[in-house]
Figure 1 (cartoon, rainbow, N blue to C red):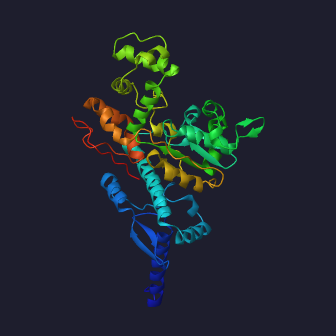
Figure 2 (tube, one colour):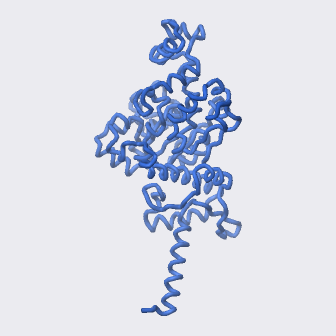
Figure 3 (cartoon, one colour):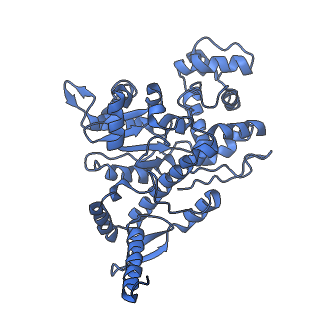
Length: 397
């Protein structure tokens, strides 16, 4: 039976309105909202450079709205949708760009994790399949409902101290620290932090579902350089005896000094090439044989099993940290210090990897391939070809 024309018109207008509302409420996508002086909302191309780079590497950026990470949790109810729209009307272009960046990072992780079977990785399908001891990088602040997955060599000392300060888990004479920068460094990496996996599994699952969760990542090869500089170029008794001596005995066929102090004074340490050789010789890419300072980031934080609300990057630490603290609603009580100027930079990859053989580079990329893909990093141009790395390294989002 044919419907009257006015009924057909009604349904058409209703469908158009529904589509408009859906795209209105999405914070990012192919386009973003911008506002002129009369507060007229127009759609424009959002971060064209990021978008072009993103699509050239990962394909067209689709607006799937299914799956756990497809939409922000704040859009689960009509009330939050209305609040979101109101906030967008007064958001600055910088805030919109930061929101777009977060959406793109989380969307990339979600899309790749949803294809995990075809990619042939991540044997564990759910959080409950992960052993308790492999969730040891999750730190919790019950006072503010925050979970942080720390990754060594990604400003984790600073973020751990912030978590200790927020949770008030470390006190002096019963009084918590008034400034996170006053917390002694030797206390930061001890038992002062509250580890989530010390709770019962059911309690852990409830907190992971309810609390806001964040992590910070870094270009995988820059993280390796930083780890080498910190653990082998500096005097470190533990790493000298645990790794430096075995590495030099194996690849240099020498008998190193008995103490780290004597070796450091004489400038005796593994070369960066020997360090990379050691990593590519590890028997199982996904085993616990990888020390946590160079263990794969996805293996430390399990982004396919844990839906993180915020994904920060070392490369954009200053703006990401400010945005995160505001998102966590703690920016009125704590501020993240400006990043130091002497940290390891991506531009150093050329110099550090010049003497690394082509075969090692390729195997090293295979080891960290999922970190590159899940967190949107790319290789230097010609890195896997039998030539020195080119000058530029591009990081998307």
